[in-house]
Structures are given as structure tokens and as C-alpha cells.
Image 1 (tube, one colour):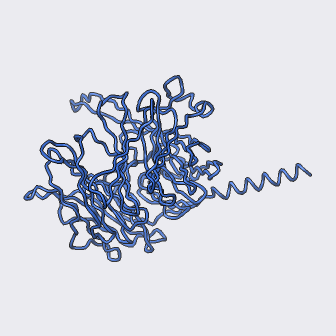
Image 2 (spheres, rainbow, N blue to C red; image 1 turned 180 degrees about the vertical axis):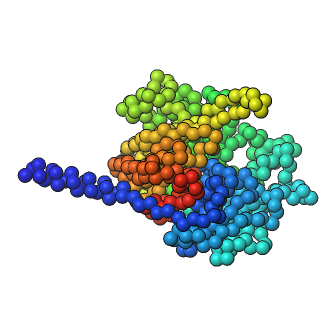
Image 3 (tube, rainbow, N blue to C red; image 1 turned 30 degrees about the vertical axis):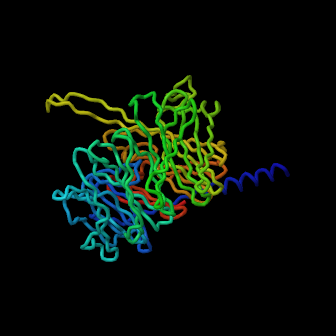
Length: 495
């Protein structure tokens, strides 16, 4: 009787695990307008999904687009993944640089910069796309104008939305004066493009020394900058992280140093936890340098009281034993080449930290036929690490997604993974290897740390995902650009 009962329990658990990872793949009905090589899902509304297409790959570790050229197209697919319209984008200024494309209050805007040679300014514009007709409005709106000098300005605006979608901000680093020390210029707008507040903050550092690591906008219009200083320009250096807070009620930045005695902090990331009224920071730390990882550093900054709580948690020996075949340092106690991708907020004030191993190798060879040297780049994207961290900084559980993706001269656009966050589970989808015909895998982990991995497409189905262009469209669905038999398409993955 006990054996029958145990078998019954095992069958139930197996069924639950199977149901939690039962995937369905639905492909789009694309046409000849999808002849460009790369695509990215940029948003959605009740009419369908908006797809950006380009001849150049998108950065798979960068949220903001910053396109390499303006030769792009935008398509609308309905909920059945059939084409509604396609727009070949033509900006009012053909020499402009597209900085980003974002949804604001259910409207799609293109943000672009144009250099005014008469006034020597870099001007940031927003132009609205008529979603129903599939065309750009005739009149753009100028948002920001910055004094511009090609020798000292990079011409790059940072654009960030608040979590509630009611505000967005722009940030620009520029020389404060003839001494070339940097100033941070910020503007905060409502989603209808009306200005909320603006301030320019001088700093004591030169460009190349003051580095922007992260940038967030709160629902209350306060801005949070995570910066670091590259003073020594050496591998064995302290990154000198700093949290700077800008608000409409102050003409100066509130600067808060972030350090941990006798430890090197590296790859620090930040999220605003609006539910619990705090700013959460998390990253790896090392006992040796700023490039390897011996454990996790976490910090909570309480917005109202402006008080800090900090914690460090070293990797346990059992966890490090999982990496005996990988490159490590400090006698196997520190990992290398792992970088944080994302912090997922837990409702109790904790976080889930997602990191991935990635690095690039290069080789240069002489081509005797063309009589020139050519350089080839090989991209390595390996394991993904998941750490669920309690509000007190202790690690509740960790998981490892095993993969080994290697590709040449493709900007790693088919490497890495895409993920969907549900209420009590996170899903990851990725190519098992980088080739024309690859197995597709799905990895699921619950809020208790229980995981499951399944193959959702076989090699003979000839599908290759483009994770850098994917987007979560519902709690349990991803829309992912892909190649199907070497032709550009999109696939909706339902869990």
C-alpha cells in the first residue's frame, strides 16, 4: 500500500513539473518585408506587436538601442502574428542618430539626435509614430539641446522610463567648461513630453574617469546614478562605486560612497524597489582584484530614512565544486568571466541575481591574397548563474544553467538567452549551440529553487533563436526573433 501511495505521489509531482514546462511554439506569418538580417521586439499594445528590423545586430547586453545606422524598418504584427503594416523609417534629418525607440502611454516614439552646425548643439528629438496608419508624424518635438563639441562630446543620450511608465528622463555627460571636467545634465518629462524638471550637475572628474554603470528613474521623478571612478586604470584597482541621487528639490547631487573594507566590488547593478521604498544594489566582490568573483555583495538604501544595510556572502565550497572544469583563480575560490545581467525583485524585498559567463577572444591573420591583416572575433557565452537572495543578504538558493555557446564574427546575436518572469517562476529560453540547426532549450526555476530543463525544438526543425531581440509579452509568453531554415521569422513561446 505504501509503494502504491509513493508511486501515486511521484506521478503527481511529475505531472506538475511537466505542466510547468509544457511549451507551445507559434510562428509568425512573415512576408518579404522581413528580408533584413536582424529584428527586435520593441513593444506591444492591444493591436499587436511592434518589430524593429535592421541590417546590423543589436547589443544583447544593452537595453537602449543606439542604432548604428538609420536604415531600419518597423512592422506591426497582430495577435495572430500576421503582418498589418510595414514602415521603412525616414527621419526628417537623414544624418540623425537614432538613440532609442520606446512606448510612452501607449504611443510609440523614436528618439533621435541631430547636430545643429549653426548653433553647435546636439539636439534630442522625439517623433511619434501613427500606430493605426503606420507612418511617422510630420513634426518632431525637440526635448533637449546641449552645447556640442565633437572633440569632447560623445553625442550619446541615456533615456530611462520610470516603472509606472508615467515619466521618462534623459541624461547627458558633457564638459562643464574649458577645463573639460564633466557635468551631468538631466531632464525629466511626463509621458506626454512635457518637462517636469531639469538640472545640470558639475563634477570634479574628467571624461573617461567618471563612468556611468547604471541609471534609474523613480516614480517620484528622483534620479539614481550608479557611477564608478577609473583612477588608476589598472586591473588590481578599487572601482570606487558611488550612488548619486538627483531630485527636483536640490541643485546638487547627493553622493553616497559604496565600499566594503578590504574587498574589491565589481559589476555592481541597481534596481528601485518601489514596493518596499528602497534602492537595491547587488554585485560580485573579490578578495584579489576587480575582475574575479568570490561572493555576492548586496546593499539596501532606504529612501525615506536614507539609511544603509550591507552584506557580503561568499560562495560555498559545494557551489564552487561545480566549476572544477572551468577557469578559476585564488586556488579555485573565485570565478572569472561572470557578469551580472539583471536583478529581479522579490516581493519580500529580496532579489534574484542573474549572471552569465561571457568573453571574447580574437585572432589576427595575414591574408596573402588581399595582402592585408584580418581580425576574427570568437564569442563565448557559457553558464548562467541564478542566486535567490533574502532581504538580509543571505543566499536562499542557487541554480546553474549549463550551456556552451561559441560563435565567430556574429556579434553574439544568437548567443545568450531570453527570459520571462512570472509570479512564482522564471523561464529561460536559449540555443543549445550556435549553428544553423540547433536544439532549443527551456529552463524553468520556481521561487523555491526547483528547476527543470527541456528541449523544445530538435535540430532537424532548423530553428536558431535571436535572444537579443526577444521580449516578454505576457506573464508566461515570450516573442523571439529567429531564423527558420535561414529565413527571418518570429516565434511565440508559451509556457
